[in-house]
Structures are given as C-alpha cells and as structure tokens.
Image 1 (spheres, helix red, strand yellow):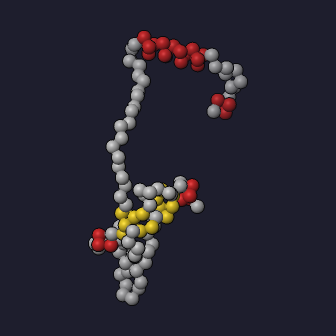
Image 2 (cartoon, helix red, strand yellow):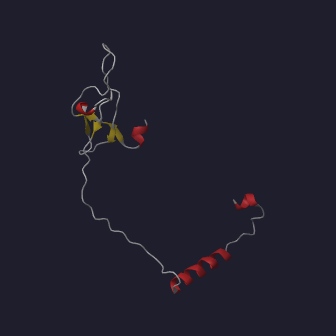
Image 3 (cartoon, one colour):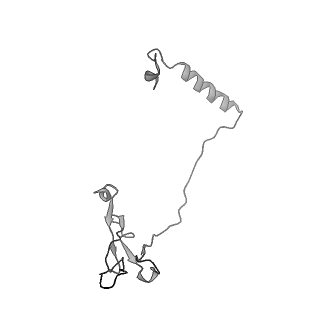
Length: 113
C-alpha cells in the first residue's frame, strides 16, 4: 500500500460519524473522507470531524491539531567574497581540474552525454 511506504496509517476520528451528508431525502449519509497520519505517533494519531463547519458543502471538514515546538535551527553558510583571493584560487582550481579530465574516449555527442 502506498500509505505504508510513507509510514502512514489510517487515522481514526475522535468523534466517529459521517463525513458526507446526502442532499437526497432518504439517502444515507456516508463516510468517504479518509485521513492518513504518521504511523505510531502519539501526537498525530487521530482527527476530528467538524460537522458543524460544513456550511453549504455536503462534506464535513476534517481537522487535526499539529503540535509546533519552538526550535532553533543552526545554519551555517560558507561563502567566498567576490573578487577575493579565495575566489580566484577556487576558479583556478576548477579550471585545473577540468583541464586534467581525460576526454580522449569522447569522440561523439552520444558519448559526451
């Protein structure tokens, strides 16, 4: 199953009930909306059917609370200043490495690809 390959599992609603409400008299309401959440997660293991929020739609929205924690993400960027000695050395190094590539066996465009 595709959901398994993403480590997802079928979520169970906290308030079981229909998610699609029939516009035709005598036709039953049904549950056709499914939600898949992270398998084995204590925080993301169920959803709520918001029947009172369906307004003019015949489908009730599904809702889930996703906990968001403040997290400091350390990021580091290595840069070379333009026109600096470091940039010139870097470019010379690239050119030198390109010149040293053995291209003697590339004699047509197909081999180049």
